Every structure is written in C-alpha cells, then in structure tokens.
Length: 189
Image 1: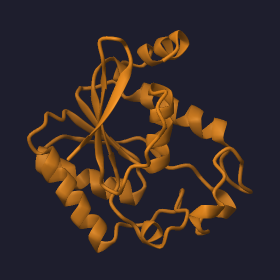
Image 2: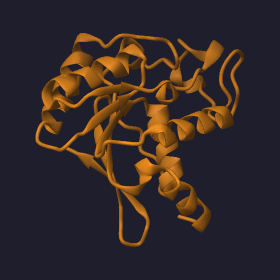
Image 3: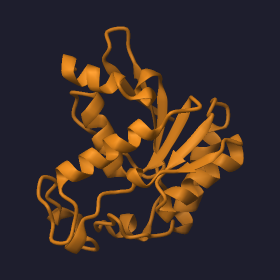
Image 4: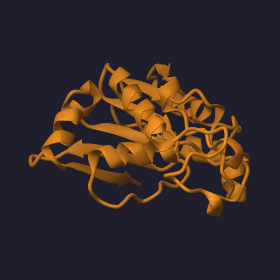
C-alpha cells in the first residue's frame, strides 16, 4: 500500500482496528445473475437461510455494532446477525450498492465498472460515497459492516493491492492490518 493510501486509511477511525464485512444473502437478482444495484430486492428463502447461517458463524465473535446498507437485502441480513449477537443496528445510506441506472435488471455480463450507465452513478461518485460512509463509522468497535459486493469491492480497492475476489452471498471476511501496515482480508468459514 502506498504512503498516501495508508495516510487516507488512518484518517478514518474505522480503519484503525480490525473489522468484519458481510455481504447480504441471496436475492432474486443474484439468483438470475442480473445487475441488482439500487433495486430494493428482498432476500430469497435461500438468502434468509444464508443470513441465519452467517449470523451463527458470527455468534462467538465480539460485535459492538452492525452498520448496514438500508437496502432491504442488507438490512434483513444485518437483522439476522443482530438477533444472534445482540449488537445494535445502524443503517448508513452511503453503504448502499452502486446505482446502475438503466443497466439494473440486465445480465451481469453487460456491466462495465468504469462507465457511468444512463441514469446511474459514476465510479468516482460511488467510490467517494463509500469512503465518506466509512468515515462516518466511529464506533463502538469492533464493527460488522453488512452491505453489497460493490461496497466490498471499494473497501478492497482502498485497503489492498491484491486482486479482488467477489464475495459470495452471505460470505464474511475480516479485515486486519498487519505489522507492516498492509491490510489482510481473511474469509471466515
């Protein structure tokens, strides 16, 4: 990680300690492999089961607060975790998935990340929104963030030079900064 990226990360209270990230459970858009974006899809039955399973994986870990996207799929996943951990829920609009405008509902193969779709959000605007949202997370710590694949991608781009592996539905990762100031992302099984 470059010195500038380390300085930017250290300016955000969240990024001074380890944190957890959970992608929401499956939606119909995920099942059909179409762009969901800002569409407020609910979880499928499988998605609810995935959310409950993720909550059980997190049951023994300290979670002081669950910050989440207010989109239904993330909010319902976050609620499943809060039911198990007792952690308070904190919705944060900036954690929402990118608005893909006219591309929403289209096959995922049509997605071009560095383009601005008609009626949608450009990549720089989305990046700035996610970073501003991370700066709003001020504790109590440790926190769990429940959001979307795009949000996870932006966090990864901010903290790591390694290639991004798209998270599966209800997949949990832990971000931890090493002694060398590089962030490491570990999937929790």
